[in-house]
Length: 253
Image (cartoon, rainbow, N blue to C red; front, side, top):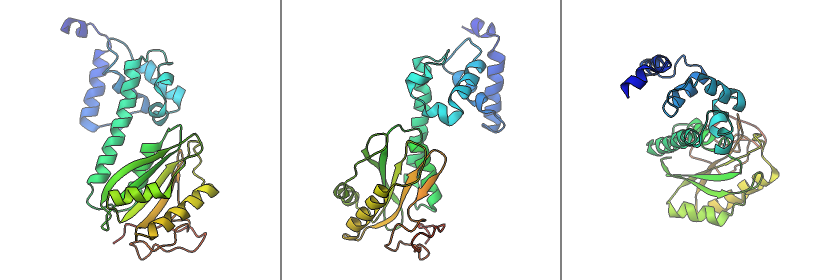
């Protein structure tokens, strides 16, 4: 086995990539070099740089590669099912890591914590998903749950199911998040109406709705920042005039 490795003309390059990563992480790496390093662990005895560059070109970058389905990844020459599954596993593992990290925080410090997690978790999804983040009175994360999954442009969400989830987790506050697979986070009239209905339902049992966030490809929309929500949150600076967009930290103490 050692003899085969020594005869591999690409082994020295692979070793140098790993040593660079071991010393400095991904700092200074080109996107294709990151993908190239990843591929070295599943594709032996082959120069994987051309494959990495082809993936970047085909899918437009790392996000596109991670979001691509297995069937599209395997259409690239040199990418078999095993490699494609590893790429998908890496994304799902990172999502799980971020979910665990957000749940293990004693108290969320800013809406940016939520945006970062949700953008990663929902990016590249082909159908709409509706997520709920359940919080305590101290803004500790109790659970992050995908409540509904719909079609490419519609998800049916029922206030009763949301309230049942809040009671189940003994939540004092909620954040709603859903994605727009089109990539445009601009909300629809249905999104606005849903937020109003959910806030009314939650208010009957004294549960606060912090926000309803719509995730697009490269940006997001915050219902709270755009004056959708009426009930005062835990932050004294959280009230906004209708239609006036204001940067809000509803996790401020």
